[in-house]
Amino acid sequence: MDATAIIEDWIGSSTPVTLCPAALRLAQRVPLAQSHLDGHLTDPLDRALAGLGDPPDSGGSLRADVLSAQVRTDRGALLDPAEAALLEQRAHGDPEWWIPAARIHAMASTDRQQIARRALARQNLPYVFPGEVHPMMVHVLAAGDRVLSALHVDWTRKLTQWMTPFLLTDFEKRGLWFWPVLESLDVGRLSRPLPRLAQGTPLGPGGLGMAVAYCHRIGTPGELLMDKCGPLDRLIAALAWASTAESSTQMR
Image (cartoon, one colour):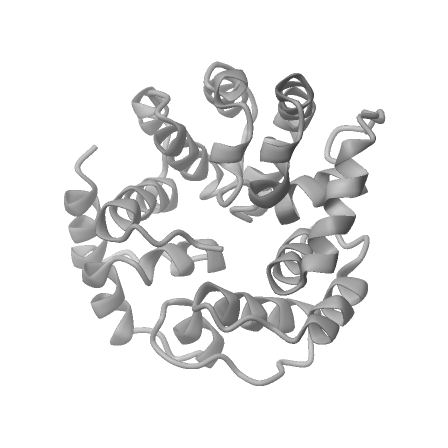
């Protein structure tokens, strides 16, 4: 995939492509994309997500507060643990914002990491309905890169297999929830089902591009998925590809 060519096509296109927060977070690590966005973004939160300004202190809504906290966390300015705990409490049970809020909390609090470690060490896999957000999933996505290495390899393998169907929800929500923990899961258990999941289920704009980005992240061929990608899908895949090439710093 020629990521630079795709980004240049997007810049030169007369048809605008509205970027989701995940795409803006990826773009902040790609100078070519960031420079283009600097002349087009006006919303303060969107500009902050793209690395073009500071996030608003408080947007009032859960969405705005989670995204603002995500910007600060991406930049290494961790929240006060009490503030992060309150944010996760507000988001608890929300299928879209609970996971990023828990991730922000785990980044700010070793106590939150220990809660995830204890929960995952119980080695009990509950049944979940498709698309359901279970607390154990939240623990994995909040702190998996910090706690999974301490668990038995067979249990990590089972956890990975149990978590795999939830990738579809991540793609549909364009959350990038799995992005920070992909390499801490059992990559061998993801390499085959990940492309099959994306091929077999209709996803909204951007979802298939996120699947391509994940394939690239774990070293699984995802180019065949590109044939089905729309403009936003191709752009997200290109930004993810370019962002990992531009910087060794990963989004938190």
